Length: 428
Image (tube, rainbow, N blue to C red; front, side, top):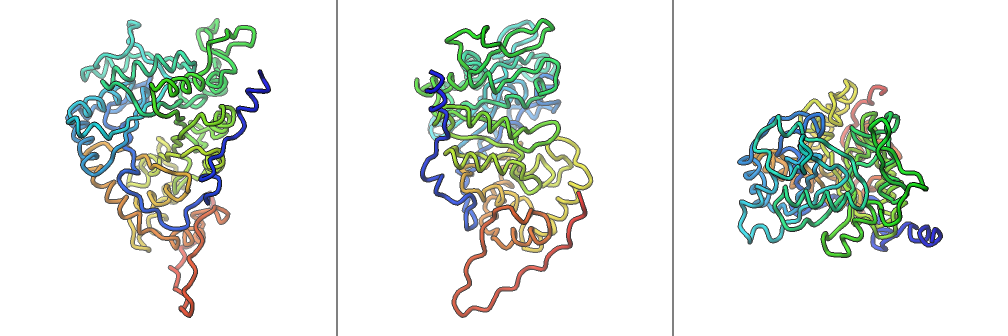
């Protein structure tokens, strides 16, 4: 049985991905249908038991934002229970409910599993929060990466969304979240639980821990097996994972992603939503993207604007950006302008360079942001390889980073003048 499981977990490679170059040789002609609207920002934050404190932009704004995205050709939407302690799912569901049947028909919604929410009194947190931020932020989060937890999470998500099914269900941030990280007193190996190599039990001190082999009860599988079964049953169309891969002290553990991809049976993951590790300011996820390419797992890349710094904000990876990172973003802006591009358009183009990337996920909080984002997407089609070559010369990209080669010169043509290199960066 163990030999059979080990054989099943050998990397599974789709021929079209294994043979494709890691990076596209030409600028990617992204279409609106290649963009996924991240619905995290159309809802308030969930507070300490969720993704931080944010104000409530309201249901009307969520409805207008989703309608604007659809009008521009966006068809896919990403959410999670973690986003606003369930409020993101509720806001997205309310927006979808306001659409006509014809508008709803082509849409694909993906959500995530791994965090379960209950109200302060223990009831399942599936009812509307009604704009009551205090009530929302008293919801209690419990991590659960079991097969049963996946089913319970999906049922709660469907209730909050008000839809009969979702297209994709993703394993969300095992071993990489604010309420369970290595080094914590009650750390539990959630990747092992998801793979069915262990389970969760109550610690004598009240925190979760991993079940030992003796405690493990057959039939109570991990989330990986649960999601595969739900896909086989038709309850979902695709199985995915959603994790950070930027290797920051507070988030992003690429090795945990690799454990999950390598440890799951072949063909488990249809896609991986990888955040923060492939953008102009961080390429920490390079090895993870390459692994996904080898294993035939399509990548939906997120965090392309580095959580705001590349669009004029002051945060990087959801924290105040350090001065040296701010300076690096400034220098990227100068390089983009020297080549006639807006910095966010260059960021979108870079995100789409790897052939394994099939979707670019962008959080949008208003109709205006939708319009601006889609304008940058259109502009990104004109960002050429000369930008990446200049970035390497300026030290903004590592010289060893795979990027498209320069196109061959036509016979008899004079060499084209390259853009002047920017001064080298200060030491980081």
